[in-house]
Amino acid sequence: MKRLWRDNGLSLVLFALFLLFWAAQAFTGWRAEVDEQRDHGAAPPTLVDYLSSGSFVEATAENWESEFLQMFGYVLFTVFLYQRGSAESKSPDKPEEVDRDPRLSRRKDAPGPVKAGGWRLRLYEYSLSLAFLALFLVSFISHALGGTAAFNEEQRLHGAAEVSVWEFLGRTQFWFQSFQNWQSEFLAIWSMVVLSIFLRQRGSPESKPVDSPHSQTGE
Image (cartoon, rainbow, N blue to C red; front, side, top):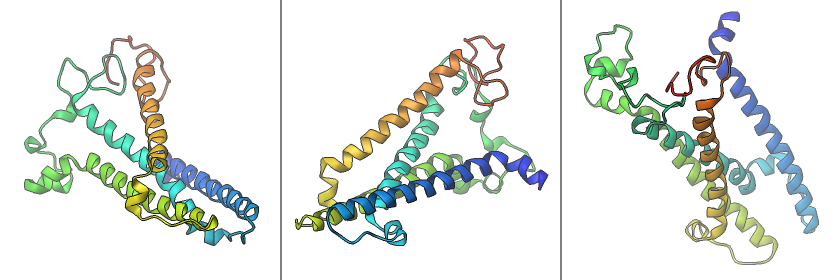
């Protein structure tokens, strides 16, 4: 157990916090939905009903969408863009280990796709950004579907006509939800890039060593 915790503590804590806050989101969102339905004189949903509702899917997916877009963009941009002095950037003055050609590797412990070569290696070389792109697209589609369902639920409460997914995508409401999350995500990652030039966090791999000069780029 100690070995498991030492080797995987970061992912375990982060995933536990994700589950905790997601559960809190579900409960508080459900209570808010109950209050709203009562205000309209409708029957309040059960927790199970709420978890399968468009409102919950929309609220969840619109946040996941922005997170995965941020990570996709960040992984991709750091391949060819630099920020001198940032712990989050490659050095603009010299090649980095991450740029070396895996086809020249002779490591026996290299991942399977590296040993296989060909299209498997080509795909594996970009698998991290592709994974985040796929997660973004799944979240984006889920946001659209959940948002359409939530909007139509609201329309039914008011006796108005329902809309299709394509019609909902043409509404400013959908894009307002997306853009308000996208801007905050890129602001957060921008602040990490810039603040790591001048500020330090002893013991964190996201920071340069405390005694490093501001001009030092990378970790």
